[in-house]
Length: 415
Length: 212
Image 1: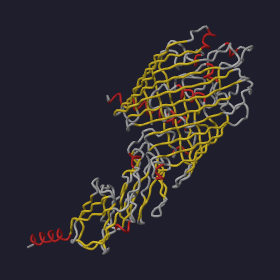
Image 2: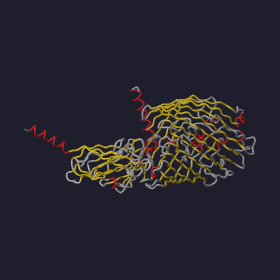
Image 3: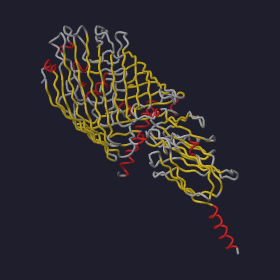
Image 4: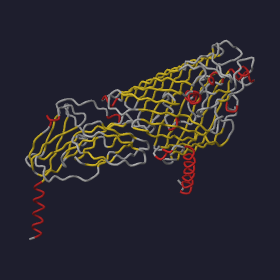
């Protein structure tokens, strides 16, 4: 790389680093803490259908051709004592309502053990580990920028404030190629889960909701009118509305480090009749998630995930069954990574209000190339195309079925 | 005269040491690599003590080397060549410890004074497994991929021992008494099948550390 350019990039990198260090270094323990960060700046050639962030019905994040801060996050972690640690991820997002906040904060305890069967626990505000796509720092995807429909939804609406207990057995401790984990969690504060996919439908993006976030969507008359469902044209996904405790169960099975299967069952146990003063509803949402990955070697892998479930709000005011899956092939050649993903998603309604149509579906392709210039800097480009339909667009006088595409060029700095 | 004396001393030194080769075969006559082979002299006086620091690195979320053989009272440094944190531990009686290895901080080396095997794990990456094997002699090495080891040893009486985590045979049954320079080639055949090979954990590493 040109020396001047490299020097400039390093200087910018240092400025970013200092900025984010200052931002998060409230802790006096910061000297011993481990700080990781990722900043992604992009130029996007957006689709002509504006996004839900602009209160429209497109299912891609950007509405205008523009340069943006796509991601900016700091992950702070440290150990209090042997096996007792914390991780906090603080994010800045240019898109959306809450620009600065926390996307994950947890305390974990994993006692040292040489037993064949071990346990660990974590408490806080975190993701169930159901994704094999979001394995980079801060739950980002190292493969594509625009994430799968499945995990775009998980990132925007799902987070659990709770306690997770894990029993696990590392294969190597048993001289076996098979390792397994069993997870069980009790949680609160994820009652509105399901709102976005019921009305807007699945979307494809990388905007994770923050601790106190509000995700907007188009002002569908059937949703917002006082003589209709009378719900705001947004959702705040991390509310506790009924006092019920939700749960999820999960299992991971691994063959060496080569093949992985993760199955989760999630049920927020929400009371669909519970409604807040701002007229947010609790949605009883249940789903199964099955994720698999196989690495052919150190460089090439195939992975996929299937999500299927249902969500209900009110006295069956809205009832949907949803299904979404993706399959992705990713290959790394030296410092280049190329990933290609196919997504398919569908929401089918079976409820009492014909004037609130909730059927939606779509499919899309995402192709990304990412190139590591060095251990800090990465550049990449991505092309995404999809075809999607949402019956509810008709209530705004829009075409139900549209084709969308989005091109991204991204500069990333990590430390 | 002086020149003659030097030549004589050199020759006499050469005569006093002997190349010895050990080969180790499994029950099914397969070569076994990475076996620690060590020769403990009967006469221990005047044995050299190494002052070199040994290294057990963490590379691509694996211990490197997988098996490290060291002489008793050797210090071992645990650098971290990965860009992520490790938490190395051992419950082995020969050395019980835990060590937090931050990505850019150098931990103090540890002294290994007790004999035997030390099994290493990482509390963050459960698939990581490594061994340090501590011997009471400066004469040791590991077999190559063909199951062979060749060493130069001073003449004398020795006890030959081998160690590998997959060997199921009673280790004392594999032990040999030998006198140099009488013997030069030693073959050891294991009687029991090996424990399962799970070194495939080393084959496919991942640059992404999931949620850790």
